[in-house]
Image (cartoon, rainbow, N blue to C red; front, top):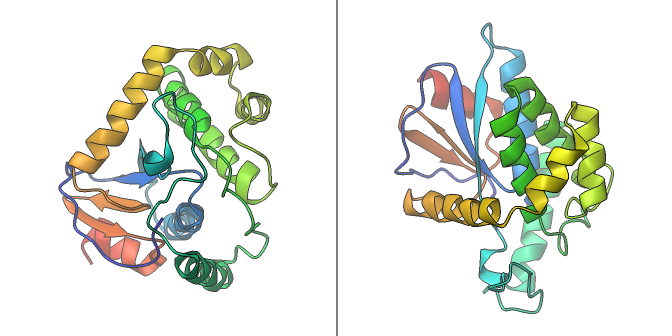
Length: 221
């Protein structure tokens, strides 16, 4: 996960009116970064399309079968996680996300949610995908639900207008799972090492950066 530092990424430039966002649903800074992006978008005259790219924060703990070894050493100390919590609390207040649940996501696996999200993006229109994407964030960080649970994902998808059968099919598709891992590797090969990472016109900002910084990134102000 990341906080509010800048970074450059070797990623493909986006067209006007779009921003590429690398994120993982279990990252609190990704949730807060989307709050910042929503604030920026509310002041835009033209809508901004999000080109989402999945990222796996659990990669260092993931077993070959896809499960997570929660006891694996990820190289991060207790002090690191405590500092991260403090940074989240600070940004909660700054971005008006006081309802956010802090003691979440340490044991949650976002891989199922990302599998479904990619499938929804491929099979449905943009607004449906966006509703699902925002619903997953809200389910975890606002409602405290386990987005690694198939039934939870079916509920979130139904609220977005997605057929429950499409959710189950995505979760059972081993080929889709392999393709998702390829997307994770592609993100890293493009220089993305932390999330959220926002990319526009060949420039990038990493972390839950404020709306004014997103404006400069997108509009070159």
